[in-house]
Length: 208
Image (tube, one colour):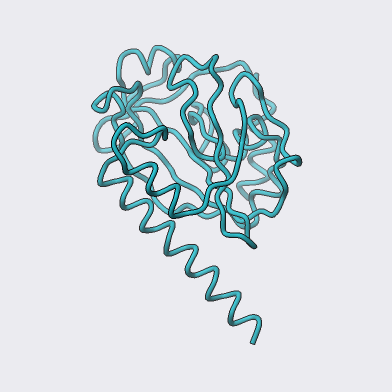
């Protein structure tokens, strides 16, 4: 059974269920608890982020988090993101979040989705909330902004940023970006840059 087929089964679960797993520093599962409790206690939880890239312009879709959010309201974030629920694997979680937050069906995201890194990031050390094993995914998808259907409780607006601007904004002091300015963020952007270069190279080869 493919991960996409598993996703269709798992989403039959109660959508209000907010139980998540928490882990030790080696990434071993310790137990399960309510998401908010896990955040408050600073336990190591599992999260996903998806970065949607326009294949023509190579710009990256980002979201401005709703002002109603209890964590980092108004910050600029990845295309969509969220916690991995206790009954999910990361691939299922990122497909669910894409559908919930910006209205993109799993069948659109899944075929070209690629994980480019997994990193542990403790946001409490940079003035934020949450301690995460974060799985970073990318996918290439061509749609105008008007195509996306936003979950207003989560997302205030979405827009495109070019790679260099996104990197510069994230790695500067007092950034408006939710991703903290860390060596892991630099590594992420190095990998993202390589993926964009690979895409451009592939397109040039196809044009020959």
